[in-house]
Image 1 (cartoon, rainbow, N blue to C red):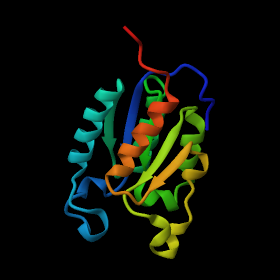
Image 2: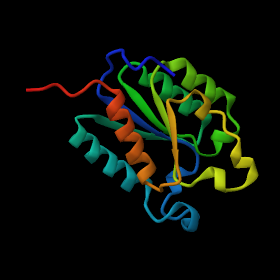
Image 3: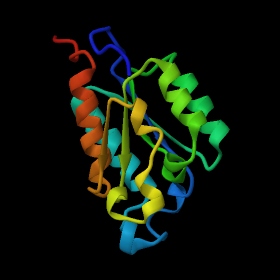
Image 4: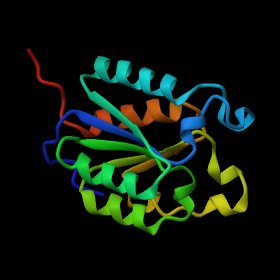
Length: 157
């Protein structure tokens, strides 16, 4: 976690981990029919309404997710992160989130605490500003609004 009083750019990285590129067709009973492109478009539009630039990325590779987190230090004020299955396994992503010095909101479409036992342990949330889960695509929307309150207000005209 980082200090929220430091001035930050009003830009947010929305970062998605493995298998989230299959949203809309992957286990719709759990994840719904909304595609990742749909979620990203909604977040970009909502970000514009909030005065926040939203950039989106997805990778099925742990190292690429770490690289995206590191790169965000140069331009983002915060991160919305769905690490997917890496939530439960990746010390490296835990360490990357801790290292970047940005507020990170972990999001999940499903309520991982109400699912299989192996999903009840997560590593990434421990170093995040907060965690939102179980609200489908709206988990991302709630994460964006949470960051909107952490980032500096938009400039007034």
